Image (tube, rainbow, N blue to C red):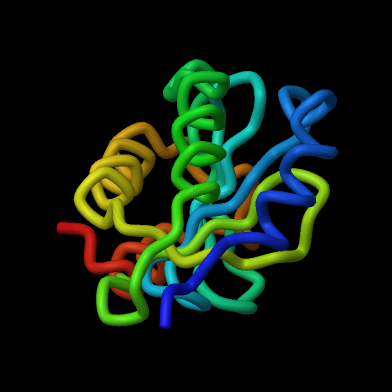
Length: 138
């Protein structure tokens, strides 16, 4: 039975108009390594619901290009057997949509890791190590 991102499509259609100014999230695998992309091209790397956050430098990503790419992917239907370990939550939604773009999402995660900023304070000193291990960055 095909998985249709119908609810995601419905909410995306309404969200797209102002979505260019709001972040969106990518997960790989779902619920684990998370990349939050912001309109200034910066990002945050997280792991699950843990309070660890590693900030990524502004202008690392072309936010608009990535947002449009993932909005289009969210509109595509796929078979359950094609579901990958990647999911997306678009701006203004709480709908998690499975995607077939694991290689691209992994590239974004690696790029974010390579452009991560140093910890902002001593409390965050251990976060990069935790994120590196949890998300499998070398």
